[in-house]
Amino acid sequence: MEDTLIGPEDDNFHPPSDDPWETETCWFAFCVPERSMMGYLYSWIRPNLGIAGGGAMVWDDTAHLPWEVPFFDYNHSLPLPGGLDLRDTTLPTGMRVRVIEPLTRYELGYRYRDLFEAELRFDALTPPHVFTRGDPPFTIASHIDQPGRVTGRIRLHGEEIDVDCCAMRDRSWGPRSDLRGFRIGYSFATASAQSAFLCYSLPKDNHDPISAGYYRRDGVRAGIVSGRRRVERHPEHGYATAFVLEAVDELGRELRAVGTPVSRIVFSPYPKMLTWVSTTLWDFDNTTGWGEDQDCWRPDQWSRYRRSLR
Image (spheres, rainbow, N blue to C red):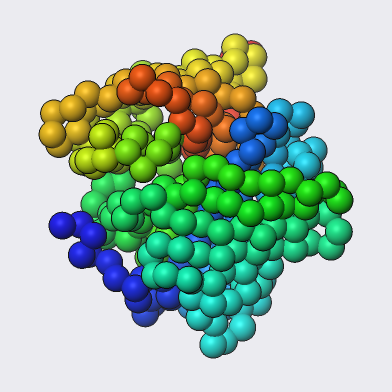
């Protein structure tokens, strides 16, 4: 079983290689669907370079540019103190993580002046889905994705907002160079512990094949083996306005999911990665679930595409 590929020690930092780009990431999402609102707590750590980056952000349907959304605090090249334990720490980005139960329950926090504060808890709905190093699309790093229920509250510009949603967390460890980038689509939704999906696609000029992920139906999860992602885009600005996923899993079950974005943000988590994140309501398996589509480009690819629309 894939669940045996990781253990409690994977909640902490891993022994780094000699690669200067060795990177650990820690990401938790949350949403407030009735307000078309989504947020991230995300940090990356590069122990061999002695730096960390990331932060927190919150967006809704009022804006999509980082300097116009309700909150955006993203940092690069913060000094990394020694002796950190990712199972109970406050990272240089301001993100706080404490493991309550390994690979299952986490307390999360963040505070930035009087603009934004988060006190959240993540409770896993399923075991992590594991990509070991060498598994496409993660050819040089290890990666896990895990849906869960996020509860708690945020304070945004003085307003208290309750959070109770299904959302995703992920972790990765391995080399991640700032000098390279690539196109990838990352689409997912979670309706419940019984019904969820995640699809990775590798977009090309004229098609968008799904290469990996998982499909959970009636509480049974299996890996995605093939499929395609179709994206409708704004004719002038290029961002996604609708999605259709069609995929098949290892058990031969067919997934069809139709996604409707309700809000979005665009930002660069790394210098060679431009990411359009769409807060998305997905229809699949005769139900609906909230999730995302992350539409990732190299900046030069996006520039070429945008100029082709003029």
